[in-house]
Image (cartoon, rainbow, N blue to C red):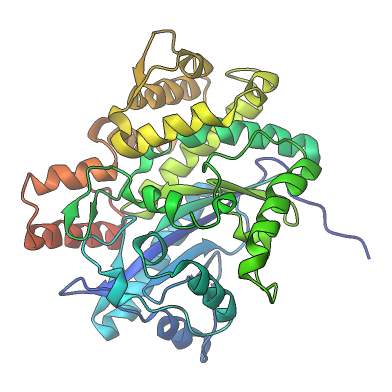
Length: 414
């Protein structure tokens, strides 16, 4: 039997958006994702195929994932499908006086008392995770993200894609951080979710590494080093061998050779699909330009070690678009010639370069991207809207506005 051919670089993309389910009045989390999916399927299940977009369960019952049912090439049409599905879900959730809430972290959820894990199919995997890591903390039950899946076929395409993605990961929080508040308090970080993402599996450090993947550019090297190390390290905790190192791998970009894809996992989810897909488009076009050597050569991209990229990621997690990058080698990657630049200036330079080359895919998102770069990340805009009032009622007011932005598929501007 002839195997279907793999998707090639940038032929299509898989996009996943995670949202919280909360009470419409109190904004408390509502652990009813299983009931939502059951209402569509007629029985408990993990996936509901709704055409271009599917609904899926996550580790915890108060989170629902919307994902492209198949890889899509037209991100603009996919965005519209996501928006339609958000409205459909909100209409159904009204039956429980619930709704979807965006942003990467619930601002006042107590994960130690409110976490309820998915109890249905595949729950043996979640049970093992819970046994090893105790999945009640913020890094497990209170982190919603946007994922992009990029296809590749063979080592040559993998090497180009992996090298490009590694260079873009460190500046993603400066574009899409949306988790400035946790436990009802301002955390002091624009991307609090990523801090927990980095540390929630610290008991087995090889699972996450430094978040930025190692400079590995062949399947054999990746399997031998990353997967081999993870497999050896999880074995003492998983005597029944339920966990597979292929999907235990939690770097900021994870490679699935069995599927022929690399998935970026460190992007905070935004206030609405329009904002998310605008950012997805910019990130995609940046990676595409790197792969096509529009900025620097493929050889130069491969030469980057993990440490300086990880240091820059730590900086942008804390300070977002205002982070000052003093690594002149990194600035030169994107054509910046000064001794330092803010992360915002890096993204402005990237966007300007891509638009000047006549990029129709980005032209569609100019308004949204201009708003994000001028007004700041969603974290910046949330904090600006609070205006220094961090009382629970003030926080609730802003997050209700975010829920409205999501339902109407409108950008949130203070």
